[in-house]
Amino acid sequence: MFGIKREQVQEFTLALRAEKQPAEDGVAIRGDKVYVSSPEGYQASIELGKLIDIMIRSNGSRMETGCVLPDGVKLVSSSGAVTIWVYERHPQVYSLKWIARDSPAPFGRRTKYRTVRISLPYLIVIAVFVPGKHDRIQLSNHNECFFRTSPLKSVHDDLFYPALLNCSKFQPPDGHPLSWICTAKLDLRQLSSMPDDHVRMRASLRALLHTLLETGYNFSSEKHEGQSWYSESLGIDPRISTIEKWEKATVQDPLFCLDVPWLRTGYTLGQVTERIFKNQGALGPRILSAPDIQRIVFNHGRLYHPKLPF
Image 1: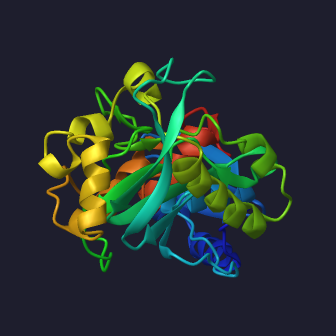
Image 2: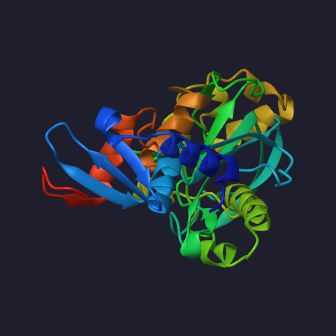
Image 3: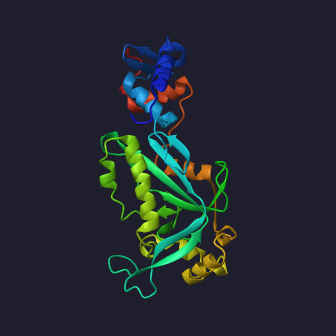
């Protein structure tokens, strides 16, 4: 029941009990059941508790802020049973494990790495939490990474694709993350075993950042997903056309990364989060009227023959 507030349950229950007669709106509550009827005479019923659960999921629940959020989390957004944390890190020089030119393999155990020091602009990581075993909220495998050249101030701010290996471009993009963080080295099962929701979420974000920044960049995306956003970005600026030139530009000016014309996603932060909710099936229909309730009961409840009493 993570993210479902007691006030929401009370609000939905009061709204239902306010429906006294099924004759006008076709909705009535009697004891622990809700009954509906259509103008054609069709009738159906559903348990009140089940209906409330469906309505809460459809209208979107909000994560309760009893959780102390990690430093860097700029936005928390929820829809249905899905919660998103938007994390931001300021521009800085990173020491990264990068695939060496003489690596015997493009990815996997035989990959040879070397340490590179390159500057990155504002780094935006979107951690997507979904229901797991026993309804525990857990980190999904659909997390995303983006760049920005200024700090986030609004959900209307634009996002740029990150010129990083292991941040994948899917083709076609429909139904997939726009900039997927490869999590092959992330032990999601171990994270999901933590009993406390808030501890689990904070640990999951740390593990996701570790996976993105510290486990090694290789050409796995080029093989498995089609392309990485690093390979897609090589032609946008001579200073990042090779990793060696990127290192040199970083030495000359660590903040040059704020002047690079990074590839635009064409999406704002708000549009990306809504896209994630849609891909996760978290954007249910809004419940605003008695006909909305009728639709739910007819779809999920017990159907009776027309013209017969309940």
